[in-house]
Length: 138
Image (cartoon, rainbow, N blue to C red; front, side, top):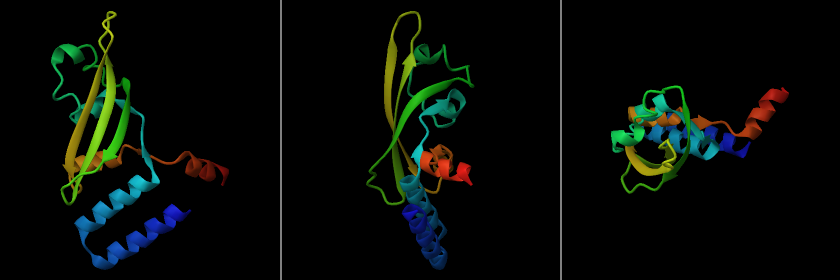
């Protein structure tokens, strides 16, 4: 409940200021405080987020065409030293198949808080389980 009150307060302040970029960045940071990222991403979403760009094709050739498959991904926001920019760390494993083990991938993406990439990141948030339980009780 306290998080929702903080969100409302920030929203009202931002509306008063009428600064769209500031509003969006503030909304993004408050949303991150209220909700967490999903733990699973579809291959298609990982492509959209450019998570395979720097990985050799020989490692991803077996999974790259299975857009509907999911991969467990650890997503964490990290500090960024640029104003109005965000930085996120992604960790996941790619099964190399044929008994060759897994390839551990860890990469960081830096993006403008008001960019299309930031909007895609907002889509990855999940509501807290506690909030979901309250909604289902009503």
